[in-house]
Length: 83
Image 1 (cartoon, helix red, strand yellow):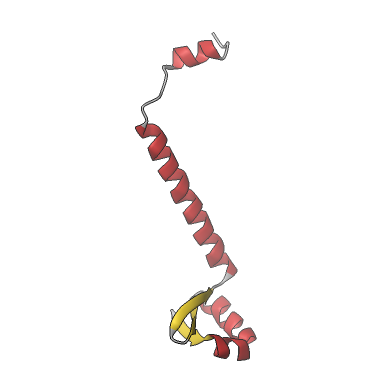
Image 2 (cartoon, one colour):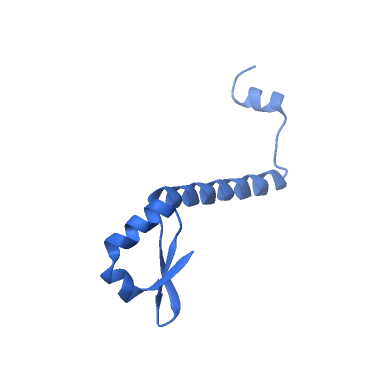
């Protein structure tokens, strides 16, 4: 993962975007030596969002299963009027 200053990114934005798209590698933007933002390919961003959503769903499912508040299938069917 590369790293450049915000000022350098401003001067070379088009080149930075092209490079990120070609390599798929994110670039960290720094301000006074501190990381402040990341430039990454849109496809990589979408994968990160999807992975985060999946992880959140898995965590919620794990919590729900841990509550042990299930009911037997026959009881659920009866409650829904299915038999």
